[in-house]
Image (cartoon, rainbow over the protein chains, first blue to last red):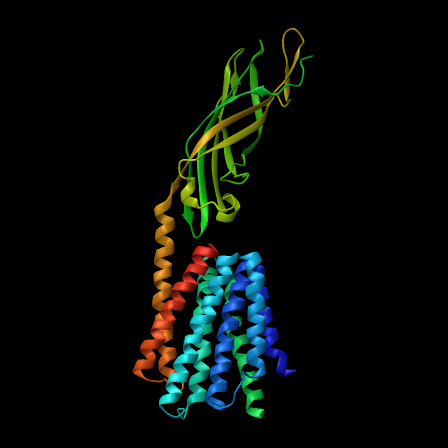
Length: 168
Length: 215
């Protein structure tokens, strides 16, 4: 039951965004948050098992769903918008390179797990900032709650993935 | 009995001014509408029913902006002219105004037709009977071409300011993220993170304001 709480809350926040704004905003936020989650999970996996090959299943799922969302965005937002969402994913990948560089220099920090927690929350918060500000300035409280719930849902999903990877 | 022919009226409009407010367009325009009394009896205007819209062009979509009306001439002598004023003021989403592939700045100086159909009621009836017993229906129509003027500065400043803010916030988040990332939690990591975050902020700003057209 707990396993799905993150996904359910995440989907609810996207639905609320769709209701309070439009499909374009919901798709954009879905794509950028999935990009954050993907990079988040990949970095987690890097510091856990730095020598193993291949991506973990959750990361693959996040990537595939994200690519599907970007593909759908072509029809709703347009080719330029979808291409830019892809660029966001690529730029976020810069953080993976940064970690790879860091790990080649030295061992994982003692409190790496705790630090990694803030990584995704800060980035999700950054992307949620625009709908949050828009919601506050137009008194669209559904949009405001949706942007906050999105961060919470994303964090719960990451927590679930973290528990799964620990099990391995 | 006269045929139910819609009579021609004339109209005089200001420019249609479009300005930006939180990603939406604010439309302002004033039109004076004139119509004649072709009969040999005097009219007491009790009501005017108006239907006004901006007709679709290559650049703009069909618009039915909201307006308020003000009847100026209440009594019209035989062969005289009646007048009323329409004040258009509406907030419309940019996507609801512009045609496909048209940018707001392209609209400045273009000309769009504004059509006003109206029915005048005298003593509560949409027709009058003259001294010879002829019935005159009081349906009128007027079309006027209106020039659009765009207050572009507000829009451009809006987007630039917010995108710069996005870059700054992105760089800050990136710097924090870079400094707390495991293995990269150093000053150099913070700088690299700021570059990544700043880039993200810029791209996200372009998506949010430029592509999505959000406030």
